[in-house]
Image (cartoon, rainbow, N blue to C red; front, side, top):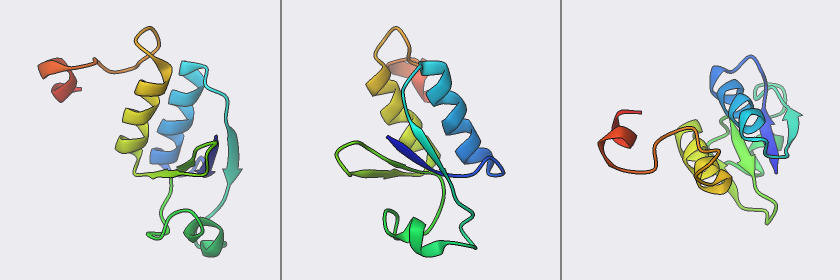
Length: 91
């Protein structure tokens, strides 16, 4: 996986920390959107970070959607939010 973003973004930082805590392998592509918008728009037409490019080439955008997908990838023992119910809605 490749995380496109930079540590100045709290949203990209949150995804990077979650990847590390879950022990999921990834590469960080440290890009400033205003310096290299074409590098981001290649995977995200909204030209926003974070963007997570999966190994199959699909891209996830928006930190909440990325974190939700990471929970699914990590499995029950490593997920950071509850799997279902009101506990998940409140997290």
